[in-house]
Length: 105
Image (cartoon, rainbow, N blue to C red; front, side, top):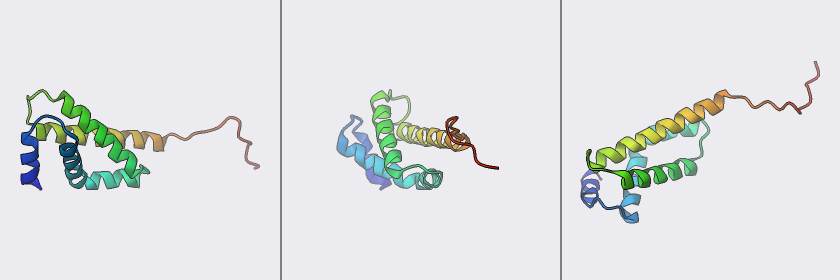
């Protein structure tokens, strides 16, 4: 897949077919990190959707200073790390309702 991904990314203009191939590539590469997110309570479809949006935004904002492949890989990893931080924070915070009845002692 690496060779074909390099061939796909030679065309630097965004198109949906190429974007889906790139997304599938990064879903495989970052599978261990994605599995960690799922173990923390994330929904797989939500993770994929976040990555799809992030890759699209990164592709549109790509300025050519890095190779497109490196840029998209960096952005993918960054989004996954931010997702992990948000889940960790969410899992640390307990929601307490002030209207809930008190437990009998």
